Every structure is written in structure tokens, then in C-alpha cells.
Length: 114
Image (spheres, rainbow, N blue to C red):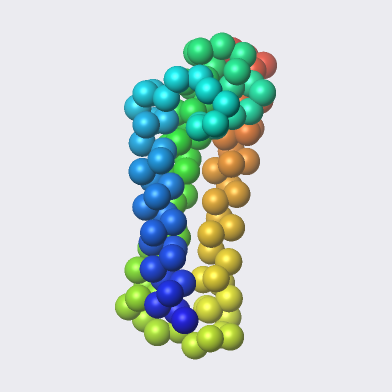
């Protein structure tokens, strides 16, 4: 079971990183289906690119943790039901952090128009 969870974490983290690279590079034009889409993101093109770049960077940074945990799960056997198992199972919840930080950045960007 820990091998499946480890591989899942690695794949999910790598996919998030790959999806965020165009956001960081500024190659995703304003749209309604791809990117960091808060109300403040649509205020202007400047806001769109700044918020998406910031959010993309945050998601890449925080995607490293599930990838690292996935690699550890492949190298270190974890007993099903142990504390380490449950912590690793819920590790992807860390991805809420970049979503919240991007939202906070978007709100601040809207107030100060950085």
C-alpha cells in the first residue's frame, strides 16, 4: 500500500509542477479554465500575470513535499495504520497552503496594485 501512495504522491507533485511552469513563465493568457483564477486575477493583465506567477511559484515549492514523501515511501516501508502511514496519506493536504497564500497575495495585489 505504501508503494502505491508513494507513487501517487510523486506523480501528483510532478504534474502540479509541470502545470505551473507556464504560469511562472507568463505564457498563459487570461482565461476562465487554467491558472490562478481569483476575482482579483481578472482585474487587469498585470494582475493576471503577477498573481499567476506568484501562485505558480508557491505551488511548485509546496509540490516538493509530496514528491519527497513519495520518494521516502518507496525507500522506507511504512506499516499500514501507523502514524507515519496516516501522515503520508494526508500529505497532499499541504497543497492548501499555496492556494491560501496565492489568495492572500491576490487580495493584497488588488488593494495596492503592486
